Image (cartoon, rainbow, N blue to C red; front, side):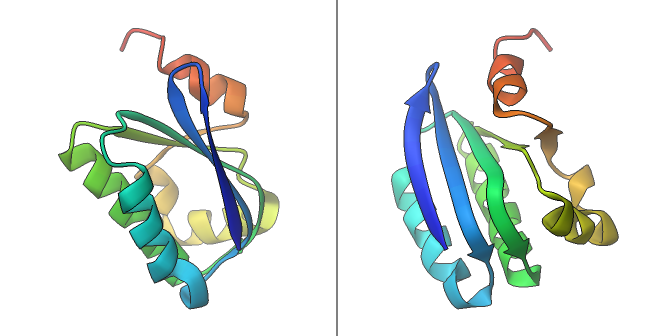
Length: 113
């Protein structure tokens, strides 16, 4: 798995590529806790994430909880069909704000609640 970070419209966008699975999940979580410290607006672009397992889901939930506890918001965008099956089966999609496009996720930060 690889990831790339960039600031877009004052939002930290993290693009995840490959497989977010047990073999890399703890390292990814530690890197995200370090990289996202102090960030208030975060979007994970999952357009190139090919697969996720339960450990990967656990990491996403951990990052969501950690950001929320520190005054941040995490949104997900572009979940592909294969990973979406895992999100749907586990009902974890109820926990996240999920958008069809990165642009929609970014724009949602500027929309009043």
